[in-house]
Amino acid sequence: MNPKERVQKFFRREPVDTMPLFSGMGTVTVQAIEALGYQFAKVHTDAEMMANLALKSAEMYGYDGVVVPYDMCTVPEALGRGVSLYEDAEGILYPTVPTKWANLDEVDLPEDFSTIFSRGRMPVVDEALKRCLDYEGERGKLAVGGWVLGPFTMAGQVIELDVLLKGVAKDRQRVTAFLDRMTELVIAVARHYQELGVDFINIREMGSGTDLLSPRMWKMLIKPNLEKVFAALEVPKVNHICGGTDLIVEMMNDCGADAISVDQKNNVAESRRKLGDDALILGNFDPYGTLVQMDAAEVPAVIRKCIDDGVDAVWPGCDIWPDVKQENMEAYVKAVRDYGRQPTPAVGRL
Amino acid sequence: MANDRREELLKELREGVVEFDEERVKAAAQAVVDEGLNAYDAIMNGLAAGMEEVGELYDQQEYFVPELLMCADALYAGLDILKPHIRPEDIGATAKGQVVIGTVQGDVHDIGKNIIKMMFEVAGFTVHDLGRDVPLEKFVEEQLKTDSEIVALSAMMTTTMMGMKKVIEMIKEKNPNVQIMLGGAPVTSDVAELFGADGYAESAGNAVQEAVKMISNLRKLQNQGQQEQKDS
Image 1: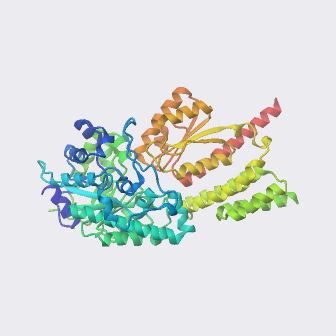
Image 2: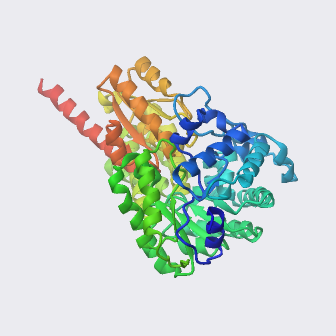
């Protein structure tokens, strides 16, 4: 079974040989950046470098899948919000959106969202995805994931977040209408990646956890839009939210995605009890704490806990911070391979 | 009678903040000014006390960030009216404090930073707000330029948190006495300790609690200072 088949079967809930090792968030490592001699800031504008870096990181550590792009600004940039790449900054920084719309009156969106696919770095991402899809290494083909921010998180990337959050109470009608447009945007981009042939799509509605919004507001404002997004996609899809999710995990699972992904704040044992054995749960270790800060000897226990608590595949709770310790990455990969031989609640073993 | 009226207005300010009722806060603040009551008392025991309650409601998951933001708007509505009427003798030595605040380079999330900024302003600090996505050396330059006692750094994302470590090193090297406060979702007490910071707040709600604690510490210091002045 090659890495791609392992991930594909996993999403179909068919038995696999071992737990797939992959993520729906960035898995770039500094070891791969150094091996390729790249500057991280330059990678975001070059399809070849973007693809090579994803593939190199995967092959170095034995990952089953890759994900591009690495930053969340490609769509906002294509909508005219610009991008800060930090080419002169020391160390690793992810690109950010420099100019958000200050209020709803300023918002200027195209009627037809397919027009953005030729703008900014959208073609770079397409080309990088194609390169990853074409790639075949010694282990065979890798699974290729696409990802798009969820409608609310996307909205927070193009308009000032406090305007959005206060508007929910004070200007509900216009905020709802704006989120409807963001939902159309997310669907258009996700369907575009689906047409390119990605193996799965991760919808990262990461700005909507209960650190920020009440469960009541989540149900009213986030859930209906995520339902529309997942209903519009045929490819396997993941509903990822980081931060507090214990209070909304059942609603997350009801949105129509094939799997949910949660971070270290979620009590997965409890979530598994609530959702039953059929739900595909991905998660939930702290990538910075586990791969950057900890001693390598402590890593297997973290991974084992994720599996013992009931995840079907071990996912980091967020992008892997590239500056990982090599021995921690190796310990994480080995632990997933060793402890992941046993069946998980939703996916059996061959 | 005057004390009853004071209590009444403090309650109005407090409840106005908690219920994010800007008009109610404005009316009570104006009454404090018109009736010659102590503006500093109204800020600390009315507005700040209300925000303390808001922090508790956030911790109890009754309030979330949208409510925090609306409460903050209500607080500012009162602060704008009351601040020009603070008497210098009410503030004392500690409130001459200055703080440099900003969100580190690579991070454009500034809600938590703005809430902390507000609490510093409530406490009478002069706040030098560098905004968001601030190049690291700018914090050092601004601290040296203003001789601020506190530098408050915020990062919402793990990926930008590392910048904080560099800023702390740069500042502590030049001036080891500067107090550094960190905030933001990925910042834990372990991270704050590892980076050599003096305090931390992990979320917007927690930032309110931390800032309230900080203010009460400052008030204790201020009272001690006044006592020492009297004694000498």
